[in-house]
Amino acid sequence: MTLRTSMSPEQTLDYLNISPEDRPDALGLLQAPVTPAVEHVLAHLSARLGSTDDSNPALGSPAAPVTEFDWLTAMLHFAPEIVAWHSERGIPEATSRATLADFGRQMAINRRVHQRFGMDTYKWLNHVFSGRIYQLGRLQYLIHQPAAQIPGVSPDEWILGIHIPEDGGLSAEAVAHSLALAAPFFAEHFPEKPVRTANCESWLLDPYLSAHLAPSSNIAKFAARFTPYGEPHNEPTDAVYFTFRTRSMENLAALPRTTALQQIVLNRIDAGGAWQLGFGSLTLPV
Image 1: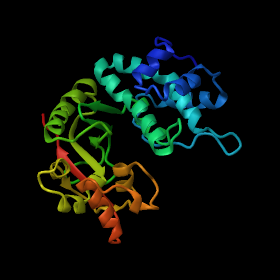
Image 2: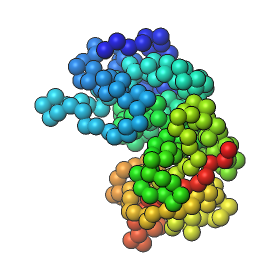
Image 3: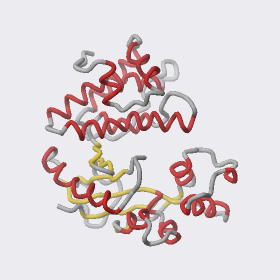
Image 4: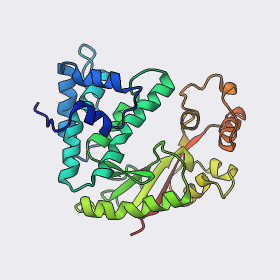
């Protein structure tokens, strides 16, 4: 397929915020010949651009697999397409860069977790490269329709899913500023999908966490913004992964207990408890 080539490889790496440590390998992917598997992913990305389909397909087959590095290579090549699409929708360059920087962020996290170049969360980036998620200040917002019943929200209503990138603190001021940007941004750039409600699905909304944190803590203040809905369900590894950036539940005793949050996460597991995914919604400020 024919792609726009308005960005040099170096500009692509800059736009995607790829760290110096990961740049040589990323540049190698960009400069390598495009294989049929990469073409397969490129066709998928092209078909999804601007789509509301949020599924993550298993491309390829056992005989002809599409690998993690095929996905990464395709996304690197596709970057000028999503940048141009943002521009055509009138999305400011600063917002486009902040949103696409999640690529480099996820790559850097992968190196910390696995000590290698790559990205085990590459399918999450489908949201970024389809134009469905945007970082506005501290938070990311994914435009979608609810998968579960939310009080006061119809099944075909557009809502914003709030996600919290690894990007510093979660102060009440930063959260309030971000929330204030959301509704005006989507009203301007996606007027055909009006939004008034946001939801969040996260271990940060596990009721146990707010009950054991000081009410003045940033996380407790964040959780208090949401009206709970549905029943929390067990996701035992989420708290460990997002607190310590390890997917292993073995040898937890070796993990640090320096902060109050680290202590709460590990103490609950030590006591035989399981961390849960909580669900909450809020009305966006206008």
